[in-house]
Image (cartoon, rainbow, N blue to C red; front, side, top):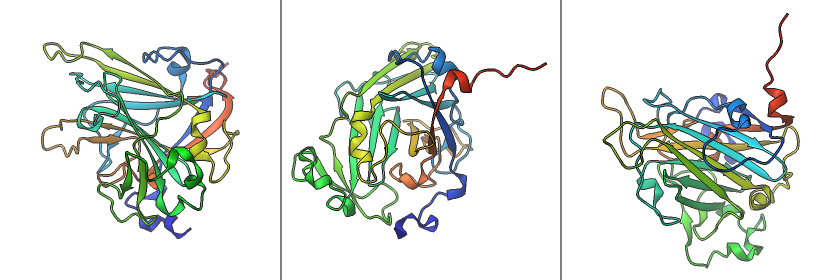
Length: 285
């Protein structure tokens, strides 16, 4: 398809981060603390940079990806001196608070998940309109485009995506999703200084069938399989000038105010090697 030409997108294709996601030997305990051995030794993403310009940000943010035969696991480490969150109802506009966001792209659809420091989530499934019929999405009863909370979406700041608009399914819930948050400090109390918060996410592979079905990719992945995944952090504050802080930070910058560009996402390659084996210290003589 011509839509994948590198010149069509605001992000230089040669600068996409590449990451290896290793297996865990047993299911993770989803409590938000990220203190299990697997998380401690998992490779971390590079430090998040500004979404618009790719420059260094004032606070640390990292992500890691792990997996087993049942789940994809994603962890966020968020340095934050004043942790705040107020929204508690599922699918509230979390993007109006400080949050972290996870995007996972299949060939013809992608999934968005947002989480605030209270553990409240907002999620949407987007299907490229040009593929809604051709890729079989129109045959799925849970993806009827005439259902409530379904509508056309044309991006945020990048309105001329070569693939055109998407159909957004704000009524879709990821099956079996588990999310937990741990706040290292005092939530909504700015009389002291916090260290930050961590987020732990488990996404059953079974629920990812809707992303995998157009190209028949394996679930769970096979050794060497590659998915496009990006992680973001959005803040309701900005670092003072002369810093050029957009308020949006990302694993991979998009160079436009829009997180809905899968072609800008990092490449995550899945390895069947255990993270405990892959990250074992090398003995020297």
